[in-house]
Image (cartoon, rainbow, N blue to C red):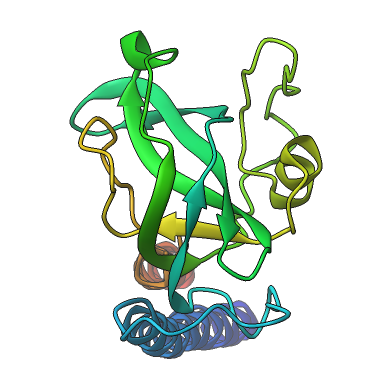
Length: 222
């Protein structure tokens, strides 16, 4: 009898734990979806002037419109496009009308266009401020001498091109040879539904296992 009581307590406690964790992940899912919706609203907003001192936290994703002169210098960041395969993001400096110098992510070109000649000169751009976090323990070291970069490290790119640590990712490109890769929310991790289903599956497994244990105890005692 005591074994049945203990097994029953384990059943209830484990079930409550797994279901509680699953519900918590559903709550986190609702929160994350709300955050993503807010970010998407910011990304798609009307473009305004470039802030005097952009902040990586408060100004991330802010849409801006900037007039100036696109420089001919480029950094090439290795990237893969879902539709076009391997290629490079083209990062260039832009000198604004008031003399500031910032970074511009012009978009994607296929590998074969790495060294092709591209537009440089007066232009007006629209895009979103961004400070990507793309580097981790598995990211290769950049090769500035060979102009092979493996992450958009804004501070490092700014030092290489002598600009402010400010990056504008274009929505549209003034150069038809470069395909814009605008800022989206696709890179924001949102696996809370997957986690919730995992906890609920564990709850079901726990019920089956402890239920089988109870059945064996009853059968043995019977």
